[in-house]
Image (cartoon, rainbow over all chains, first blue to last red):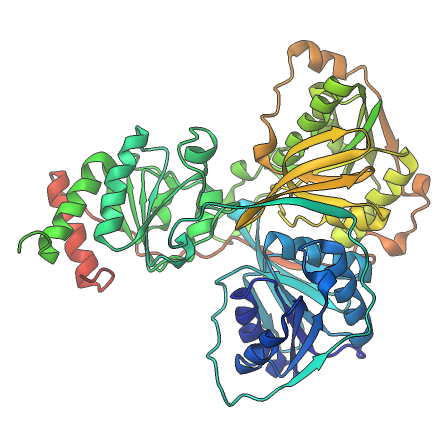
Length: 327
Length: 264
């Protein structure tokens, strides 16, 4: 097992890879080893230098026209060969849907373990890696250790800080050309970009959340107004998307995970799946008619009342204090 | 004649889990169990394909002996036959070991056009078994399918990714993991539930699959659980009260500004 060394980071997501480099560098220092970033794709050589600036001590680049399309097998075969040859002890991969599939299949090919969606990663005093993730629909945090290497984990976006870019950082860039790419087993025949809100909800500093307590679709306007007043965005719970079909994207375990400075939960009961998606918000305000609603147990400020009255009143109060519309 | 296998998991009904607030331990033994939600979507999809094209839907689970009730649920929904793969040596298997057991079972059950799984299980949500199974069987994989069609030996699936959706095609046999959006699973009728009791559940142990101890259970696992605890909740829980909505709103607004949470 000692023949494995080094921490690796890979994600096809340009933001996530930087966060992985940040966390990976920290872990590499603790494990007294180096952080290597992996860059795969076509015409991607420029990325390598950028990653060195963000703290990668080594960057391995596989630049190949067969990696132009997002088919899994060519990527998977490259990662499998690199890992078998260089034997990292820890491989951090991005928890995008693509990344999770890639990680699971890589683990299968290497006969290795994989802990997906890690929220915390630390090295204990025995030098063991402790990987923590949410299970049981948000009810519990499980701590896992690996019995074999490489240890493969996936990490969601925005869990760890993006490191600072330093022009003066130095690192080794290795271009790998002699590698066999496996032919794809599936064929992507069409890609449709999703309609994405102008700013992503993950980026919003303030999020106003709407749940089942909203009586009709038009009521989202009062949430919109509050969000607008606070310079934030509106997010919804899964039932408004799945059952009522009012909206297309939801905040929660299986949807968007957010950690804004302020989350205002309006008419949201607080089922665990939703709570898992907002748990890391800095401050939580809950407005709910039901004094027994579970969301109230995890809020900093609690208002028991009808959102249809409280929310417009809150917008009005804030506007008045801010002096909006007075000039 | 389409042959479809649906892999299901008997999961803890996470919506009914209770936590001992003093120790932060979960009271898992008391929580009811059921078919994992997305696995029901996989079953529903399989049954719909069978209703349209004819064929056979089999279902398999790796789990404790009481997972038989989960399989009865699957049979009531419309699966034709079920397989329960259970052995005391399988306990504490991680996804590496579980996918090995499952793959060995699938090889013994026979050849399939489609193998369907849920995108992840509701309790551990690791989304590993489908991908690992496809690798072990050496066949194509389509994950996160929200729409599916089968024409001859070609499967077309629509997948929903973070910033795009894509249509993917593959030749059978294929492993496909499905999302909740793909369909609305049926509730079996009383008649269907009764009929399910007449359907066969095949029980296999480790020895029936030629599985020996070192590749399963804790010994065969790459990942080990150290601890499972309810997350700490450290919130202020300050109630803002008042006679009218305006009064409450005023107090809340002022508090948020004073605490520096909201700035103009």
